[in-house]
Length: 244
Image (cartoon, rainbow, N blue to C red; front, side):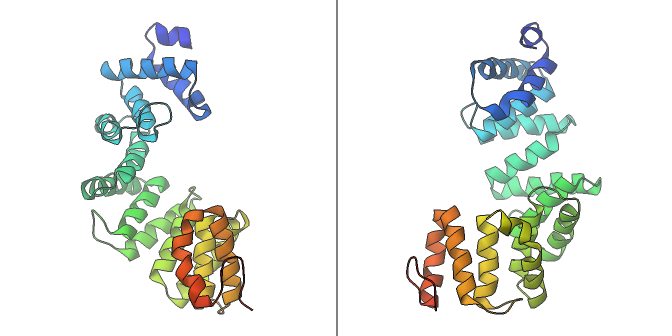
């Protein structure tokens, strides 16, 4: 495939990227990146999507979200396959009001065609309320579509929304659907369920269980320590100890 790419095949460059990009930098990937640059300049929308993906992640090329956005926007306008999903991820990473407004428009189009990944992104934007008005009811509908379709990440985003709604029934459901993520010790899931037990919303209040979940979450993600410190204080516990 390297020979085919050298002979001008943009398809070979794209296929090599798809096969090897997860393996990280290598001499072969350096050649592939050079090929993607060349084919993007020549107008290959498929190469634009791959190059934009690489620039947005920063592992195979110097991170450049603005250029990544420009490349994948051009590919999306040309209706290149997979450009919408790549563009939504990049726009979320950019995170400005205009980027999230654009993300919502791209996601609306995808969701209207039944794309569950688009529903996930649309739900996230509507839940965040930046770039578009917050709409928790619509966010819930779209996140449930993504969750029912088993889109990766949808379970956690639905949990985030159910905690944001924060009624007895929503928090009870949040705890109920958390089991797969709790078993994997997902730090955000541990934190959310810990909050439910800490405040006694949707479940019977159990501060000891909450703190145990918080400790496990913090062990997975030390950055949670700042958020958890005041909760530990209110629970009357110090580092490494559980309430009696």
